[in-house]
Length: 193
Image (cartoon, rainbow, N blue to C red):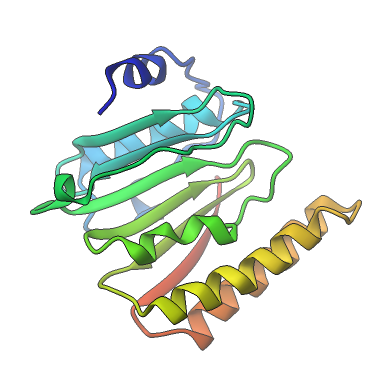
């Protein structure tokens, strides 16, 4: 973990008025410390104009990687080393800043390429998404998902009604992942309380 980025993350303001994420919103194997980490991440990133990304062990709540991208593009472009994930129960969480769609974009399916990552959590401005994908996936499945998601995701920005597109895109993606793809990939949407 890069010390500078972790320090930036630690010093982000916490919005205690932001809607919380509770144990009931997360998979049952997430420990109390991991639940608290996810809730705090939501409260720290809800109003940020750029992305943050954490990789953590959902059984212990230990942070493995931390990236804060307050750069010109506001997107995470960091390299991870999978050997740091060995013998761990890995999940990642990142935020989608306001003005972007809440649901996963085609780029957000990195989890399908990482053998030891079981969950990818996405904090949109008004929705929380959980992508569960345990195991190793065929490269053609990964590319098919990314292509379908990217086509709709990027085309949606040309529409003026972003809320409608956000909902339509999210529902399409959820149905596509849950009904057309292998059984061990699942996408869930949670509305904030």
